[in-house]
Image 1 (tube, rainbow, N blue to C red):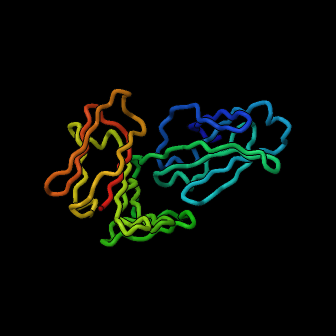
Image 2 (cartoon, rainbow, N blue to C red):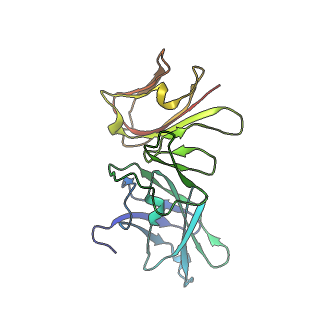
Image 3 (cartoon, one colour):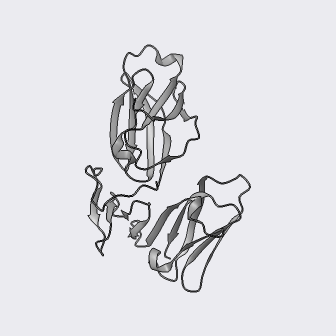
Length: 231
């Protein structure tokens, strides 16, 4: 393992996998993130055990060696959710656990990543300033997880989704300008979810300004995700 290795730890029973650490994982941790697995005795008869990683419809399978394996670098290039499961033999498998990858503070030249995830592709933003990841649903994400160009969900209604961190709040307020979400004045909040980083007693509210800006307010800022939709 590389010097400075960071571990995410899982406990695997007969059919279930559970993440047992609380480490926050950020994008651009390539080569440093290793998954460690504590397996129940029922897995001992299998000489070959494999770990399946899945993100945005792309799947990578890797062998478990001494209870460890490296998390695929390509899945750490940008924020999102990496699903992890265990498989052995013909049909011996588990459910999935999640590694949430948050936006890092790392920045670099405006070159697109070398290995975009299939079926996602990298495209340039309309103003040519950033590279965006276009997922299998046609939504385009910048590296911080913001949907750059809103897309539909099959119902003709435009949506805007964003991951945010506690550090994005200023004076306990997070403002999402109308010029960013680009939704009409009939836009409404569909979900506001706390992911991590806040206390259990977080009190959070939201409001829409007259100019169309959405404002999240919290006495204790937190990491989370917001979904807006027209209609």
